[in-house]
Amino acid sequence: MKVRAAPPSSTYRRIWDVVARIPKGKVATYGQVAALAGMPRHARLAGYALHALPLDSRVPWHRVVNAKGEVSPRRDGSGHEHLQRVLLRKEGIRIDRAGRLDLARSRWRP
DNA sequence: AAAGTGACCTATT
DNA sequence: GAATAGGCCACTT
Image 1 (cartoon, rainbow, N blue to C red):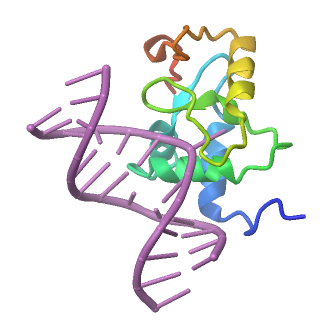
Image 2: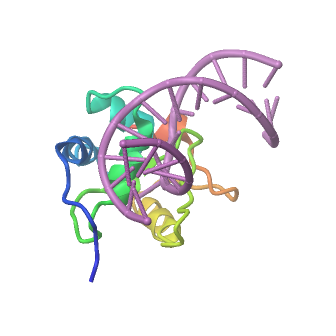
């Protein structure tokens, strides 16, 4: 069965490395993760790297949201958005009725 | 090998 | 706020 077609590149691992440093109860944006990984303006890569991340990994992928403070919609129908919101709430992050969280309050500042 | 796609961002109108 | 445009890179076809 095909889980992932290609092996993880070093680029992915740089992204995952940064995500692994996000503390519990805090979130980071894709662009922020990319910048911390030494690749400014490569936000899209961060999203791609997380998409390729195996689900059983210990990387806290759920702590990465988009710049609007919203859980990014999956376009391939994987349906993990709901799980992400559950995990975030479990860490004490408040998400309002519109599905948004307070980035100003919850953003990770390394 | 060229074109399409994607868990995105910023600036501008 | 919403809609547009341009930018970025890896992966698939």
